[in-house]
Length: 391
Image (tube, rainbow, N blue to C red; front, side, top):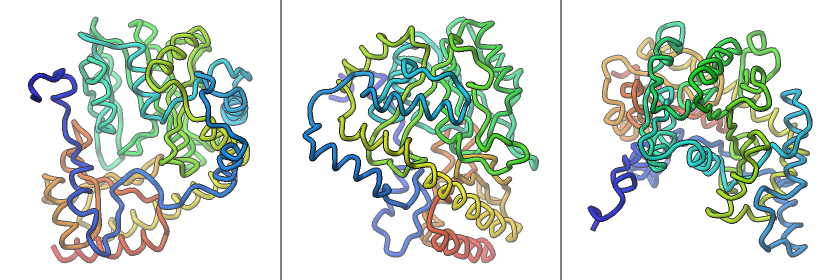
């Protein structure tokens, strides 16, 4: 029966991350640092907005591009953080950041096309390209004691006549690698010269830690270097900044000329995002700055705690991540991170995501999410340190 299915769907890789989680999800007392979300529930002011919308009967079909109030809030958010002109027509509300990625790929790539991506990468990027019918092409980052880096010549060499898009995730899941404005400008120049699209995943743009390097209190963005009609489609989500992973709401920012295209893609996939969810998202944008600041500071202190604890064992290779909220590290003598993650579950009772799930360059690494309760990060750090010191 499976053989009768479309190969692009039937041949998708199983997720090593989900596989490890499923193997130990119910283990008593485990410190779960494997998944890419924090431990805080959605703040009350966001939930109250959704409840008010439900009480008001907002349960019907709605605007395919998003309710005007949310698109207005998105435009205002980008004015505040990117100093962009106010233009609600650039924004399209989607049923999650994942759907934003899917629609962007559907818009630019299909059978016989190639999508170039930097790796290690979030596996959904790779698989979403395959579902669209395109071939994922990996450009591995380099890792050294100075951190992760991109070889721009390697990226340029990966572009072929079949390339339709460069998928650029910065700050990166899982590495935390963050491109500089100069690097973003060089990538944009490559896209212009080769007439390919950039799909810019800037989900973690608020989670940066070195304010001397990043004085804008956010990561460098293609918004900083691109013209309004440049070939860049931005994908983003409400999940991370505002603790809304379960709400499944995201957005696309793109040239207004693509408005009808994205309206059609939304219409023929989900027919829009529930209006009460959109009211909650608007409240997040309009009222949520204090909460985002709290999340960033929480991640900042946890980053120091976990990096210092693991480094002190002398048995790991890591650099403090520039952005996002993940530590991607490797353990001396352990090349199979999937086996290592299962061993750590059994012997240290800590859940980590294996680097094998993040494609080229990720194999020997482990990903740890530190956007958690500091007490939980401290406990995880102590357990991991004891285990590493026992090796």
